[in-house]
Image 1 (cartoon, rainbow, N blue to C red):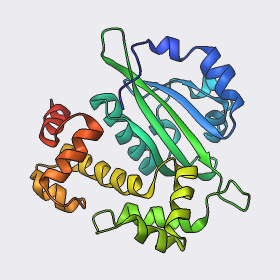
Image 2 (cartoon, rainbow, N blue to C red):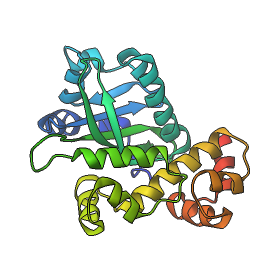
Image 3 (cartoon, helix red, strand yellow):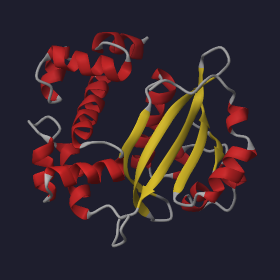
Length: 245
């Protein structure tokens, strides 16, 4: 997915967007960060979940100021991939833990913001709550368990039918459920998990592409290359070179 069209952080932090619009969406967290990871805009939901008294208390701070060290490190690493390399995060299923001790499943999207010269100036993010519980819009526990299993076993020879069986659902029903609640088909969930793992290895290790392909569940080097280029626009080695430039 491409970055947002060129615009300034000031435009995206305008009260109309950050204040008036996203303050009216209590089951979503909205934020804008600059290149240093400091919040430049946020909605009231994030303010409350971070136990801040006002937006003024939150703005200018980083995740290291607001979250436990382990969580802050994870969020900062994710932000760095977006800000440094322009790598978007799209509908990633996450379990969030806030300083208020509130926890909840959400789908997180983070996109790079570019200035008029095309340089990455920061990021904009949105985390939408997934309502786990007894209501009709809830995420069933078997689905959550299945996604957790996928995230831990993406290198295995998994199929959509196997995931459906693990969730205790017929394949067609499982597909409808994942598309409705997660916005992805089971096959897309599997591919997304594998591509995310491959991208991390390409950035952080010197492993051969063929080894990464095998470790991340792809049939071979060419399969990883084909899917990776379709998702990022770059072949694996080109992505590694760009990430380390």
